[in-house]
Length: 142
Image 1 (cartoon, rainbow, N blue to C red):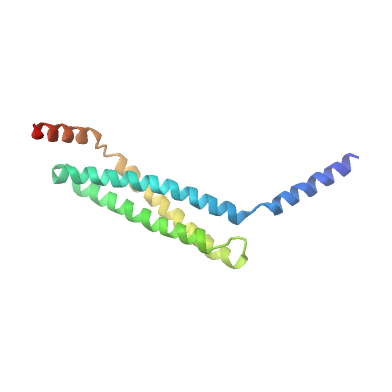
Image 2 (image 1 turned 90 degrees about the horizontal axis):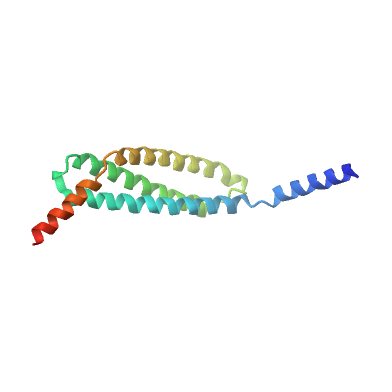
C-alpha cells in the first residue's frame, strides 16, 4: 500500500513539473524586472535634474552628469533588450533557447554595470546641497 502511494506521488510530481509554463514564468519575471528598471530610471532622471539645477557650481558636476548619463543609457538599452527578450523569444522552443540565453546574459551584464554605476552615484549625496539650493531660491524670490 505504501508503495502504491509513493508511485502515485512521483507521478503527480512529474505531471506538475511538466505542467509548469517556463515561458510564462520568464515573461512575468521580465515584466517585473522592467518595473524595477522604470523606478531606477525615474530616480536617475530626478538626480540628473538636481545636478542640472546646481549647475557647474556643484563640485562633482561633470562626474555626476557623466555617471548619470551612462546609467540612463545602460537602463534604456537594457529595457529595449528586455522587450525583445520578453516578446520575441519563446524559451519552450528549443531553437529560441540559445539566443534567449545569450540575450539574457547580456541583460544581466548590463544590470551589473548599471548597479556599479549607481553605487558610485549614491556615494555623492546631493540632498543637503539641494535643500540649500531651494532655500537660496526662496530668499532670492523675496
